[in-house]
Amino acid sequence: MGKFKAIWQLMRLEHGIMLFIAIVIGSVIAQKTLSGNTNLPLLNVFLTFFTALFLEASTFALNDYYDLEIDRINKRTDRPLIRGDISPKTALYFFYLLFPLGLLCSFFVNMTCFIIALITALISVLYDVKLKKIKLVGNFYIAYIMAIPFIFGGAAVLGNNAFSLGTINPVIYIIALIAFLTGAGREIMKDVMDFEGDKTMGVKSFPRYIGIRGANGIAAVFYICAIALSFLPFFLRDFGLYYQNITYFILVFITDTMLLSTSLQLVMKKKPNMRFHRKYTLVAIFIGLLAFLVGAFIGG
Image (cartoon, rainbow, N blue to C red):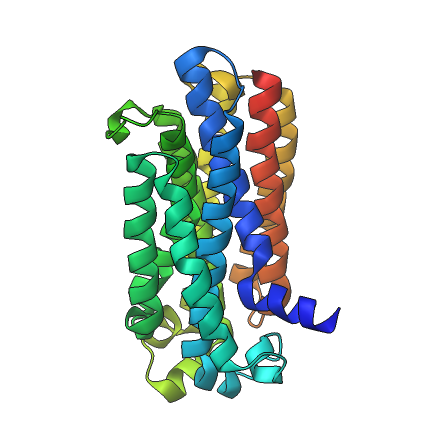
């Protein structure tokens, strides 16, 4: 059980599951637009699940391999490499195995999905190896990783000859933007948590440029913008599935309440419990994903 937990923590498999939910949401909306139903091709569901899981798991393993020294400085005992539960060499082996498998799965979905997966995967490796020290770039890369699965899911139902993202329902892009803003907020919070280690290693981040209080304020702004956008699907008819969808509204209201409470803590408290609020916002995001997922099926 201990080894399984360590592998789970290395690969952050909960993130892979959340990415897959985002893919399903994009697929359901696109399928509804194209055919009027929410019946997804079973093979595509299977392939997109393993695309998300393998690519997410492999790049997180590579991330921990390259973050080993800075994680030691930041006393990240939640990381299995720091605790010695998994060796750095084993983390690399996981990357070498799962990375190509994820790309292979995306290839069998369609060419559009393969290109999205390939570009995203290459940027992920570049981030782990080079871009991480420029956290102003890295913050928005992580936010992109949280947003792109919705678009990937929308592309997954376009068919084998599809090669244009222009045919994807614009609603999917709005949902992706909400995910992007929330992801950016969480990453800036992580910068605050890692401030001492980043300072020692010479990593440039929002807190190092504008201070911890300023960085917390920016994170709060991103959350509030995401909250504002999340109400558009309920009130605007153009959002179809989510227009006056009570199930969607109730779940997203819970998410927004959690994000708003975190935003207030970030702005009002001098030293908010960042570790708690990082976990708290992850739960909020998961509920938000359920809002779009359940709302799509009930709205369908």
